[in-house]
Length: 627
Image (cartoon, rainbow, N blue to C red; front, side, top):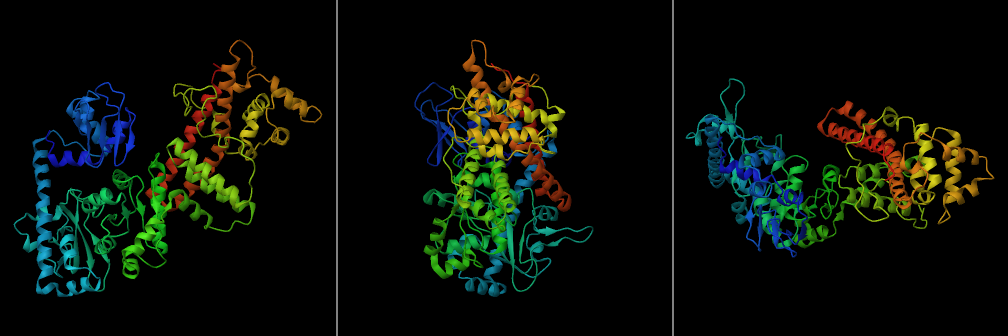
């Protein structure tokens, strides 16, 4: 098995070292790096640093030093090959086969860089020749100086099907095809991919030419043409200008994402060097990871037209599941109909920087987008807005970030609809709840608990089943304090049994304005009412397998109460959230059946996994014990 230096470099570049180390060691951000107490020796003051951009860790106490592979061998105790295999699986790479032919192929792939560099040199030569006059004139009109042309390696592909092939004839034709320089169709003679285009080299993080972008000169389609994916070039894992923008970002402590490479070049001409661009696709998860290795909050600055704003929202949707404390996106909105090139021409670098400095946080961009999506005059339209916003929050995998997004959206909804009311403590029952007696946080049920039952799977299809509604109301009767904490969530529940629905409504009205209300006090309020008999029946009911339905007796009353209250909080969250998730899952399934695209399928599968997790949580709660 032959692992070339190039392959290992690619593996390391795809791993975020702080995330890898953070799985077993508590790390905290310190400027552009991370710090931690060294896992290789005992210390109280952190002297262990992690640099994601350079891909290494170092301890100033014991001199431990290494990269992602060294971490897996030294800290995890894996062999070199086991470490490589585990990291490769995480990075989505195939480990080269144990075959002598694999070594030969790796060597050939490495030499593809010789092909792309030779092509870049030839394109540059053509731009400087007499054939390049129209292209040079175009660059002058675009305001691109000679210094910028050289810095970015501009070139020209002549209008010919064989000029490049002839110029690079020292390389085998198969290599020219594999590098993307030639097109091979069936049994026809391979011919030049780029013809009659202004050529812009695409470089990797180390500044090596790996692909090209070409802009057509004159009329024709497509206007821009990029190299295809090759052994050197994966457009979903490449950011244009990363090699120049990464060091520049260390000076500015920011990174700006624009739509295309001509935007990047225009900004560079204006003196703004910390800009990158995706390459003809929406931002991918891998590209977001690359951005976050440079700065915690990259600024997305897409065109002010409809297409640009749609691209910004696609990036926002892609980022939501990946958010974690301290890492997000910001959005700078350009004037309608203008791109960065237009703006720096009209207002200069200062005008562009002013817009970047006013970039909206991700939460504000989502809010503004959804509020502007349609009218908000009817209750149904307002409810739809709320559903859309909470769907965005639910897409966030990190529990703490998800909780704060839900709170932020609720606060904005209250302000928008003038529904201000006194703060009543935690209002998001499905966010992780800290135990009232101290200790850790409850996030998910023990996976060893029994699998979901059929009745649990039915929740959300026709409202809450009678057994689950009864268990909920009985729990609220025993612990009325939960009514005030979860008033808003409880009002959203659909309870099919009219008697239970009426009882819950009366309990909400009775307990909403009273603090310190206990079970006995609530029953005293209900006694003159018709719902009293149903309330006492529920309190006496057997067969409810939830901790919050059990009587408080024995010596460990406090421990039982803490468990019951914690379980009740989570139970309410599941009952409220699952119908919403299933409603969105039905919509996502319908959308996917119409579009049959990868993005729709990913959304459907994400919602399905959320639904299954909620069902597991419900089943776990029904089997929980009071101790």
